[in-house]
View (tube, rainbow, N blue to C red):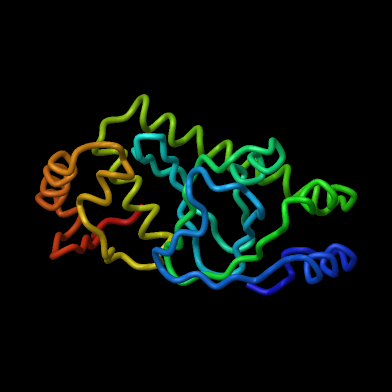
Length: 204
């Protein structure tokens, strides 16, 4: 991604002046639950996975951030002076702008920034509703299939390097449940299981 996500020259100049560019390796954690939010990430390249984690360490996958996108949770925490309630993990090697929290509100003087932040809230809210619907109204097999499709889309590959335990952790269930459902999906020719790999055979 280049810097053409924004077109306002003054805003671009401000970003160039204040934002720090950070490189992140695959599966590296950018933000941990409990961290003080000192920056808001905007993805330049790669994909970030956003996971909700409670005090007991239980996790629930929320959504992905693609190039040009930022995290509504991080914005909300910095504006409310709260600690992070989510984990941001690099789905693949990634590069982000780290926007200092003090600039998030200050840049609201730029209409383009204001529109960007408001659209971020709208998009993330819709994605969270989808997650809530899956958890509340769908069987675990539908949640699992949705999760695998999202991970494959974010990685740009059909063959995921992933363990059953890591899936169980992010879907807040037991490994045995995930393994059983994956075997059932394999029998239905939806995917192919390997050693710590899952290859999706059906499209979205």
